[in-house]
Amino acid sequence: MADAAHAKDNGVDTNTPSTRAKVQAFGGFLTNMVLPNIGAFIAWGLLTALFIPTGWIPNEELAQIVDPAINYLLPLLLAITGGRMVGGQRGAVMGAIGAIGLIVGADIPMFLGAMVIGPLGGLIIKKFDKIIENRVPAGFEMIVNNFSLGILGFLLMILSFYFIGPTIESANNLVTAAIEALVATGLLPLLSLINEPAKVLFLNNVIDQGIYYPLGMQASAEVGKSIYFTVASNPGPGLGLLLAFTFFGKKTARRTAPGAMIIHFLGGIHELYFPYVLMKPLTIIGMIAGGMSGIAVFSLFDAGLTAGPSPGSIIAYLGLTPKGNFIGIIAGVLVAAVVTFLVTAFILKLDRSSDEEDISASVEKSKAMKQAGKEASATRQKNEEINTISFVCDAGAGSSAMGATTFRKKLQKNDIEGLEVKHYRIEDAPQHSDIIVVHEDLQERAKGAHPDKEIITIENYLNDPALERLMERLKKE
Image (tube, rainbow, N blue to C red; front, side, top):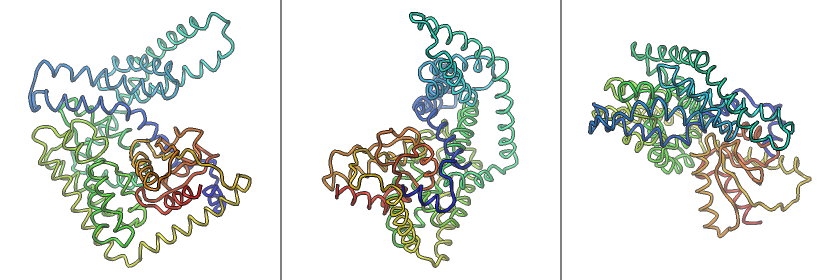
């Protein structure tokens, strides 16, 4: 395969994931624990925005739901999902049992704890089931399954109450204290020095789902909103970057930026602007400046959101903005966009190189990899039939979904039928996939998860040369 051959030529062992790929995979795991439950988080955010004493329509009776929902419902959902991801339905039950020990034994909403205990419970029951596999006498399966789950769950619940919960709460308090210190000293905008580079390396889910959202839910439970939901999800910097490329980019980038801008700002798929930063790495300065400016404005207006905006679109931002915070939220987004636009425009005006040269180099690189792939897979049939194409990304719900939808429309336009084109999280792409399409910054992780599959890497989700070549290839089938 092309990527494998190219990687080997450069001395890279594609079977050994790098640290970045491992962190990306960890972020993807966290995301897949949170993403299925986002609707419940939004429901809680709306409940808070509307019915608490400082809400739009205060209602003492309905406000009684707020605390039980954040203390019990949401952590249990996370634990159940995490347990199921690792150990199936029995893992989900184990995760829930363990989580209740955390919840009762802690003084804070146990989101971080649930994201630990859920997968741990799933792992415990999975390992136990593996040990007793083929060792249970016929007719005793049900009693063994039920009592093993009950006994192990009981032990995990006690362990969670006395040891795991307090440990996680202490770690949580340390992180909270550190970030609150930044808030108190006015240095919270410095988080953009970490956030923006991490995002373009597809580590955005690690920082959002793993750090800011759990902390934000705790703060929101106390005061009805939190600035933590905005520090990495602000759509303003991405809007400013893509506007700059629209006016001052060169050829290909200038042509594709407007479409990416609409989908990013309204659809909330931030991955669309990552390739533009990677193409001109110096523009990360504009992203950091915009991110800092946005956080500074949010802090100045004491603005926040009631829940995590997922996806991070302006629509989600406005929908989760509590009463009295609209000016601050809108100002933070607009200021971030303006600052990023000005800095990025200045960088692009100084840059005398042509992105067409970068694109041409990318095309030549792709052609070389394609040729290497042909040589590496000479034993495969020359006209192998393609039935299934899987678009994959970190979470399987953002850029991959858009990529799959766009590609299906192109297939229809070209009267190509009978192909299954779907989107997945990288690790969840089905084994019957003939081709896996992934962004080039996630290819190492995709290669580690699917070493025997043909993997096509892309730089741009809208108009990428690799996808055009794939379309031409399908026309010849």
